[in-house]
Amino acid sequence: MPRALPYLLLLPASLFLLVFFFYPFGLVVVESLTRGGEWTTENFTRMTGHWKFAPAFWNTIWLTAIVVPVQLIMALTMASVVQKLKTGRSGLLYIFAIPLGISDLAAGLIWLAIFEQSGFLNSIFHAFGIIDRPTLYLGYQNMWVIFLAVVLAEIWRATAIMMVIIVAGMGLIPKEYSEAAEVFGASRWQRFTRVTLPLLRPSLQTALILRILMAFEVFAVVMALGGTTLPVLMGETFQWQFQLQDRGVAAAYAMVILGLSVAFSLVVLRLLHVPKGARI
Amino acid sequence: MAEIVIKGVAKDFGAFTALHSVDLTIADQEFMVLLGASGCGKTTLLRIIAGLETPSQGEVWIGGRRVDHLPPRARGISMVFQNYAVFPHLTVFENIAFGLRMAKVTGTEVDRRVRRTAELMHIEQLLKRYSGELSGGQRQRVAVARALAMEPDVILMDEPLSNLDALLRLEMRAELKGVLAESKTTTIYVTHDQVEAMSLADRISVMNGGYIVQADRPTEVYRNPAARFVGSFIGNPPMNFLPAKSEGAGRWHVAGQSFAGPQGSAAEFAIRPEDLHPSDTGLSAEVRVVEPLGPHTLVTAQVAGQPFRAVLDSDRHITPGEVITLAPVPDRIRWFDPETQKAIA
Image 1 (cartoon, each protein chain N blue to C red):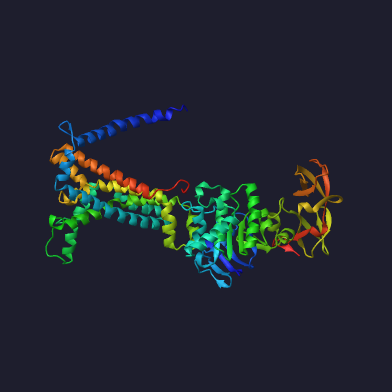
Image 2: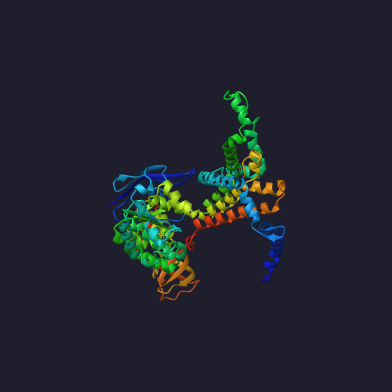
């Protein structure tokens, strides 16, 4: 095989990415830093000056800070249980993976059907005589309920992706390590924290980065459940682009999301770094 | 003091019986080798003693304490695994220290014991490395050091040398024997390599099909196999077997010759290849293959239609097709019951 062949074969995909990804990406960067053809930081000052920026920023951070750790713990627990199964493993994995096949908007709508005024939750409460008439849960008076509903929907929707990655990672760890730890006195919990978790670092990196990026881009679920009552970064990007027709500020928002994603990815890579020679 | 007593231990995996009611006593500080082909149950027995497998039946006692219901860490054992199981995410130092840390041994004591065992296994210069930076032989040393650092009553070894190349295996074998003798632990060592078993063991338990067929000193196992299987499994080349016909009064007709043997009506004649020498009278053998091995020559022949091997002095020139007469050393002839496959005394 000529040495150039692999590069030649990869060329179309690389060109495609360069043209349709990096070029528009460059345009967004330029867009965020220009206004009326002049280089300026005004887009960013406008963005941060708007009263919705701080809530959008902190809502996004808080959602990520709550959803991702809960999902990590759930995914690790579920993966450990699945790992122990002798039969029916793949069947269970398929069931857990069902929410992955649903778009985030659909997921939001399913949870909306539960929480809205004529939704399942009201019906059930009414049927049991807990309430006399339907309550409005997802109103601006109950921001925390909207927040909670988004957290629930996100956990329901996207825990499986972490679990699938972790199950695959656990499958790569030879059983002998756990047995050796057991013989040398480690309890079940110590085996998990001292052997399984450290050996799982590469998979945890993948799962966490993937999930944190998804969490910073949360949009459709919030739209379905809270509209603009619960502002988030992605929602604001959408608002500025299409409602307020200000592409510059929308681009600035996109840059904030990008900055957060890069920063947190680096943190995860750093925290879960595996030294050379310490890999399985 | 750690005598190990195994009483009626059996293990089923579903419909498959890996062990049939095994009884075995291993004396304090004894080096016991469990020897057998793959699937004979030797590793299962070791794992039951370790507590990594639960017996379907029976009892395991270590140092006068019944342990079969206890987790591995409460049994006073440590173990060397076949693939070493040296933790990749820990340095050599932390690997050796792992069990001590779990046992909450103080820092200075951990340091002392790790350095002492590392020195013993000649790996003191590797303490800061990760296992990915070690060779197979070095990993093996770390695994042994980790087991020794616990100063256990019992060390269990599951084919610890099987992943090393031949030269390294020879070197480690001698080293292990020295180190373990000095550590005064009771050792149970699983292997399928009979040379390893012969050279290391105080006693060998030969296992077959989930039974212990014979447990005895290496020379005894070699010279006086308790069953046909032991004779055919141990020794390279293995024992020769020939059918025998009773002539009555303890005389047996074997391949045209008459031999003195046990009383009874049915028996099989057996002789080790090295216990034959060319002679004027004896078993007539038609030579098929001649393999000069240096110190001696391995001759594969046919006697009475049966394959038959002899290890002869290399001075004598033998050619394939030749018919030679081989006389067995009289007191090395063994007899087996064709029915029970057991040795006839």
